[in-house]
Length: 104
Image (tube, rainbow, N blue to C red; front, side, top):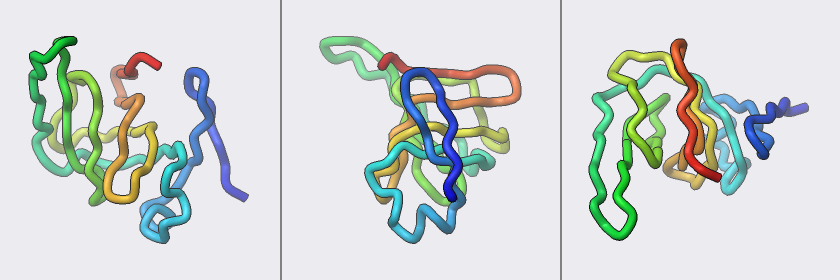
């Protein structure tokens, strides 16, 4: 039986990398733990609503987050978000020091 955890208004399936690779969780809210594999890329988006987008790798999956969390290469993180098959659109990133969330 798959475990779930609630964060904010949503439930997230606690999954492993192997479960994500099997494809059974495509389109579902998931949470994975891992280490940031590369330097996060933080982009400023000066369009209609100025904001930031951060992209990085965890356990071989690309993670995109709408914001600029204070994380770096080698940090241990827990990522909450929707699994799209090749990446995770993160709604929250939890580190040892903080939890970063986006607006719902």
